[in-house]
Image (tube, rainbow, N blue to C red):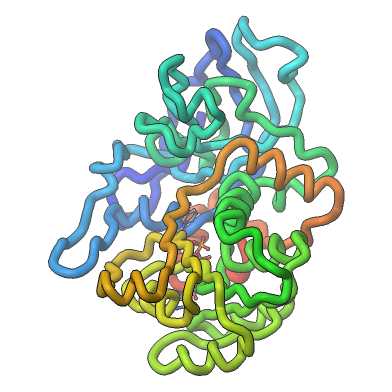
Length: 354
Ligand code: NAD
């Protein structure tokens, strides 16, 4: 098995090899064909998160990451080996599947795992984070229930659903129910931000405002169906409120640094809801009194669960979810892919073609 792995943070990934793992018990080995490149891969590669204020940084090792680590969690591939406990009704050799990567401990006493909310498990084995991921020729998946049939959906698109698809669905569901004409402001028009526009439209939402620092990303957002687009930075609060025309009840922040989180808070009307998704880092400083008088809800969103993945895939298979722009890049250019994403040079999603 070959993998592009982080050996040292911030240094180029190196190709590592390990013996093929013959699956035992309920395990399934998937030969990777496509792997989306998410900004979380860039964070893991860089090795830290900014906590904001004078709190400094936290190392990814404190979140359970050990090096060397093959990154990549938006995985699609073909089943090539199954353990003795895997039933043919679950999965068979040759099946092509999306891999749900946010795998939990699966212990009988874990309420989260038993409820298919592995993404909220306290002892995760997340592929591409705390376990080896999809910048590799093969991944080992602990159980067939983490493998989802994507039918005839383009595999380069299907792989994005296991992180960006479920994350945006989960974040949007936190804002719902909301009338279609009530504006929702999305901050960041990268892989997740564009997926969120597609998802909101699929759910029948009409009033979508997309905010991004980069003009070319705003153009992608417009093409994807944002009603209005706007730059980021000082002084945009009034512009966004003006564009919205109606009070802003919901924001989703796919950047989530100190300035974007403040913007999300400032543009909300009374009783509004802000959902924070990005992990670019920083802090939000709030007057607790103003917070009460504004009656705002602040939510943090951590990927999505298996039910979200089944729902997203169902929408895609039924043709209800528009495709986001995806660009395939050869597997051997894994380092180029990470650098392009870090430098803001990706429109939609880059997909490693293994
Ligand atoms: P991306 O690089 O594809 O997109 C980021 C976008 O944000 C870019 O278009 C960039 O121009 C824009 N941007 C950067 N700074 C900005 C600012 N100050 N104001 C407005 N726009 C700005 O990244 P992505 O893959 O979409 O991921 C976005 C973030 O979400 C990352 O931090 C990633 O780690 C995180 N993430 C979180 C979850 C979760 O469940 N919480 C899941 C996946 C990704």
